[in-house]
Amino acid sequence: MFRNIYELFGLNPFFSDYMTAFLAGNEELCAEPYSGMPLYAVFGLVMFVSSAFIYVLQYHIIDRVNFNGCKWWWIFASSAFIFNFAFAFIKLWGLLSGGIEAFGCDEEEIRVIFNYGQIGTFTFVNGLYGFIVFTLLSWPPLLRRLSKNCYNTTPIPR
Image 1 (tube, one colour):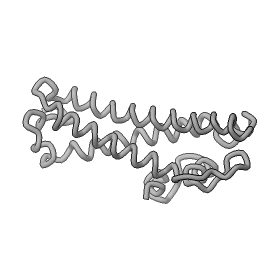
Image 2 (cartoon, one colour; image 1 turned 120 degrees about the vertical axis):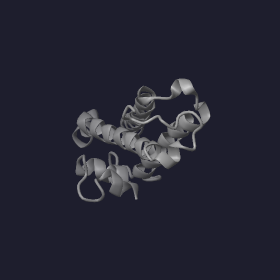
Image 3 (cartoon, one colour; image 1 turned 120 degrees about the horizontal axis):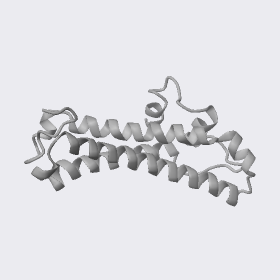
Image 4 (cartoon, one colour; image 1 turned 60 degrees about the vertical axis):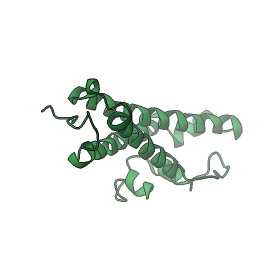
């Protein structure tokens, strides 16, 4: 499910075929099979849960008049983007650095398969999807009206 989302609903990946295969759990890392949950699922679940948590934090936990308004919506939405961007960057960087140390990969092989642009592109897409999930949760009036004080908090000033 998450693979289709990250690959623009199954039509075209935003990054190279090597990165796509690695995130899907199909690519070997330095001639060693990568075993575990596909990284698409890990990043997708963290992205969705963290964005939903930031929504709940703003509209239901904090829920103060001081945090009501367009400015606060953008601050919380940006925090969803930044958290998801940073999580994906740190996790991918750690995996690739760990591959160099654990499997004895040389850095040139890592750079050929997963260059810095690939990591940056994926982390940007992950952050953007976190922003979109937060927007989809906080935009509908029905979900906002469940909040006592932040029901007028939208990205567009009123």
